[in-house]
Length: 536
Image 1 (cartoon, rainbow, N blue to C red):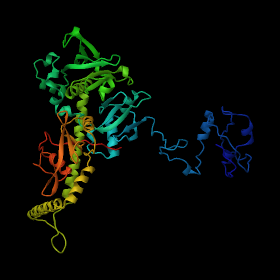
Image 2 (image 1 turned 60 degrees about the vertical axis):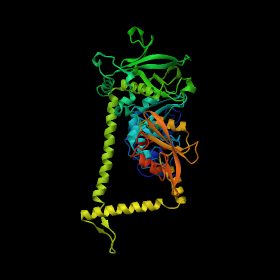
Image 3 (image 1 turned 180 degrees about the vertical axis):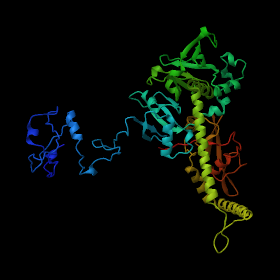
Image 4 (image 1 turned 135 degrees about the horizontal axis):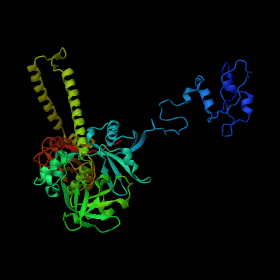
């Protein structure tokens, strides 16, 4: 830094800025070829100079010089507006917009939304997937925060998995290839802990067997409860198609999943130790579902999953591909892998999510109760003198009933307006709802529902591609997606929608959804979880 002849420095600290001819020309350098400057306390009898001279400040000062320099009083900065604030992410000398982390223990995590937009976050080195999800929930103003999850995606290999709440995000990213298309996706996953609520749906009886003497004679349901509650693991068994990437053909083999690892039988379904071959140790494995497995790997079905070492970088040669016959079988294997690997940790994660959800519900109910009790009172505005507070409880109840009847009359009058207004309402109101997905195809609708968990009651509404002016309700039930045609019809000159040939009529899709969130109607289950997308 050079100080030009810009100003004259007066006072006892003049030599700090002026220096002297002997210091500037005695040939001493600081290691980089430039003369070094030692800052000395001012001497009262030292000769003075009227003009300041250019000085070169050397950063490689000796220890003695550093000590002497730090003992000097600080000089006020004459141009503070040119320097960055103390806590600014953009520092002096750094490119515009490229800030430094708040501390050395933070890392950048880039998360994508389902609209292909991304958001970068500074997170601590030990931040878990649950922590990052809560940060994104607050940023994107999402509701129902416990149903959101981070999904690890490897698009080139077709792999994806939901990170467990306790997994460290930075450690997961450390296993990715340096040059690849790997990314984290923020989306709903209702089925993260659904097996704790409906274990029989996730563990078919024919796939559960006892592998220890202490569980001999127990029924399948009792074995499942022991699996979820006490941690004693039954054995998961069944036939799977297996393929290693070094070999092209798929082979049907009987597999056994135990606490000690994954085994395959070299002779049919024999469990004899001499016929069992250890395939992998669960502690060092991660399990992924495989998308588009027929095209990428020639799988015999779409229900493919993959196991790979968790500590190695994702490479195709380390993968072992397994293919099930249906979605329930694949879900059973992947869920059992999670339970056998993490054990009690998953139950702790589930209990924590449940307690957080209960706290949110209690806070919302408390806020509503506080508003209703402290702010809302019954009033009568029928008189000419203005409103009055109704203090008699019976009079207040009577006024409430009268107001409800008036509201129903107004609603009926609004719905009986000419057909033009009805048509405008029916074609526009559903487009603002999170469960409406426009003109997506049947396959895309199934993929959306599968990605968010295959939980009973998950649904979306889309435009029908085969029938003009019709819609389709896609609903998940028992790990399968069912589709119901919503047909427009007319009755008394008014336009309605129906799913049961006119037995039940709805003025628009919003009323149809609200009705089936309370009543099943012709559906096998009530509508519960809307399949939504969020923009980060």
